[in-house]
Image (cartoon, rainbow over all chains, first blue to last red; front, side):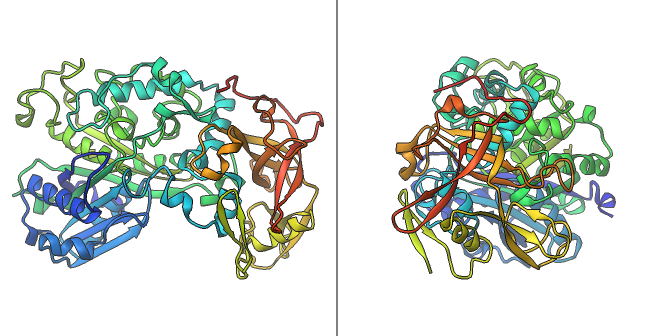
Length: 406
Length: 169
């Protein structure tokens, strides 16, 4: 049934705040700015936006507050609890709300003081909360942060497929090169494999400090509407070819009771989205993969079929994912180098890629003129990007995907 | 409602915690338990209210041997929990218990998370932590009445390949 919605909906506006470590303001203030920027990007007025959606982990601001700040009166809104991989899924739910006649244009946002307030890495407020229910089996044993939650999967995968720290580091290197051409990126400095290996360990054997994403204060927004409504808007739309998620492995939070634990949700999500989109891996020009840690990307490239299971280590260190490579990945720098946004910035980046207007250091990027010089401080536009794919990650057991075309 | 303080964390095992209360009550008696489905008879490593295999909501606690094999591991080099910093580096292991290994499908097993400790009940040396090594349950009794099921190396012959990534801090 969803297949007949292909290209019927699109992303028409994207926006964000500054990516910082110390926003000095509320998630409400940041959400208002990100939504306003996305409306401005799309050429939409407040009265044109009649749907709002957001996701949070008890660290954001509800739609009912931000609607006042921008004079938006939704016919539909929904704030849901959700982590990574919610971005893509909410794009699908926005399509559903519009298809059901509940509203016409939906602003999806995420706002978080993920560095200065509720640390996404689990220190501070989160580590001070009492331990009860399912946490009794985790935090009581000193298992608390995201990377610790994922590490059994990572370590087992290293054993089964011979992945090394060097393979993982090559992902960080690629993303840092991309970020060096992104004026918004929090960490613009290019790093080497040795830089990653020489950074301090967080969890052995699967994560050095530089294998981990950047806790960031930010808000982000993506606006979805119908292709029909998009016709008289400002930007060329990014058409939604297919969306899937949040799909899961058996067992959800307790997926490690089933096996193989080195398998992730993309195993289930991947075949469905390619089937719906009617495209193959060769058709994908650029990817955005949820790089909470370097390992999440390696696993997802395998599981979504960009390479065979076990060959992710070669895929990420072959140059394919670099700008100028066959299929560049996380061209903004992603969570590892641009900012940690809970998945939003990788979708935002792909929309800009498909427009041919990424905001790099090319003098006339806003006119779509790029040099395609991928050396430091220059271009990050992928030449002739027609189709993009996002692979969202919640946990090893939870994922979403989104395929867009220009 | 029992509350404990353990490594700087407030541990709350609520009276209506039908998932985990029995696990920690059994631990006080130095028994490791899993849930057994009263309809299909299968055990489950995560003590949830329903049977993942037949949806039955009828269950009872079953004591298991506490012997198993390290299925995966991690060494915490940076603790986000202040109360664990004196333990760094410490191992957290995912142990596959001997009972019901590879059933009802070849990829299934009863898998329990805990720390890998030594004979003094302090973290096992990192170079000793490896997938495939055999372990047995050990109970860490705290003064305020909390008991945590933990694991120690049993010294038995390993199951399958012994593997650890050749690195150290």
